[in-house]
Length: 296
Picture (cartoon, rainbow, N blue to C red):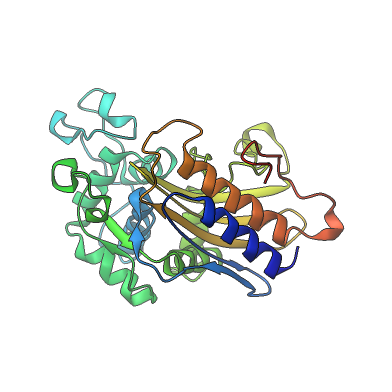
C-alpha cells in the first residue's frame, strides 16, 4: 500500500471519528513518515507514564537512586483507576523496578505515584523530555483525580510527533544508553492493554512464555480516559523492519470504557493501516485481522 493510499485511509478514519485524531509514525529503516495533524497538542492520558519510566531509568543510570530500592505500600498510597496495587494489602514492599513494570504493564496508578515520589519532583520528567528534544511532552500532575477532575489535559500533554520521537529514540538505543534503551523497550513489551494500536494485529504478547518466535513484536504504552484514547509503541517485524508510532484521539462522543469503545476501535484501525502499509510484500499477507467496523 503506498503512502497516499494509507494517508487517505487514515483521513477517512478521522472523518468518521467524532473527535480529534492525531497520528505520527516513522519507519525504522527508511525514515518514511505517515502523519495526520501530528503537531496538535493533545492529552496523553496514561501514555505520560512512558516519559516517567524514561526519567526513572535516567536517574538510576546517574546513580541518583537504585531500581532495587524497596517501597513499603501504605493504605494512603492507593489510587483509583487502572492497576492492581490499590487492592493489595499494605506492607507489600515492591522494588522500584517492580513499580516501573506495573506502571507500564497494567498502567498502575498507585505504582506511578510511588515512582514519582522516588524521583522527588515532576519537573525532572519535563526537563529530561526537553533535553531529549521533545518539548511538547509535559507532565502536569501526579495521578490525582481530585486535581485532574474531568480534564485529562491536567495530567499530561504532547504532540504525537514528539511522543513517537521518544519511543523511536528508545527503539534506536538513544535514551540514556543502548543498554538502558533495550531495558526500557523490554518493559514496554510487558504491556497487557492491547486494545488500541495492536487491536487488529496478530501480535502475540506471550511468545516468550510459549517458546514461540513471533512474526510481529509490540512494545508500547496505552492510555485511556473518558472520551480519550492514546497509544504509542514500537512494532518490529520478524523478517526485519518495523516502525514506531503515536496515535491520539480526544473529545469523542463515546465516553464509555467498553471493549468496543469508539476511541479504542479508531486507534486500532490506525494501527492496522500502519502494519499493512509497512509489512514487507515478500513476507506474505500482513498479520492483521478483518475488522467489524465498516469493513475497513
